[in-house]
Amino acid sequence: MSKEEYKEVIRTGQLQGSSFVPVFDSPEYVENKLRSMTKDRLKNYFRSIGVRSPDVIAFFDIACTDIIGPIPQKNGLREYKVAEGTKVNVYSSIRL
Image (cartoon, rainbow, N blue to C red; front, top):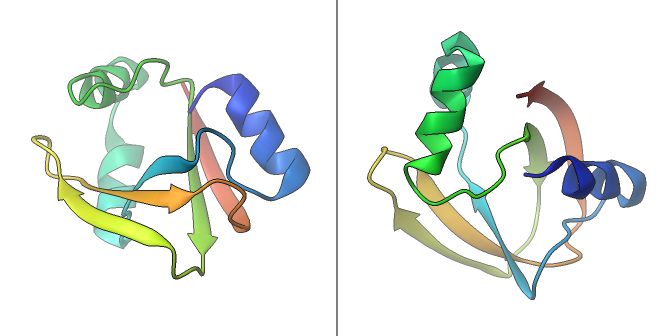
């Protein structure tokens, strides 16, 4: 997400964006893989699937039922669409 989006998520504890916000499933093995990549490789990894401003990767817990997906991505991630305003608990992040 962009720096501005990240600040708003931290400030409000809610997802920000359009009516449905794209998020990616991140089981422990995916998080470990992302943490092992260089910042340049991470940016390219997310740009390859159309992420426009990969400034921060935020890891968070979410409990909601209004989810669309999974939508498989060519880099192996599974994308979901989650309603804007959904409460999240950010537990970690990677700044790019």
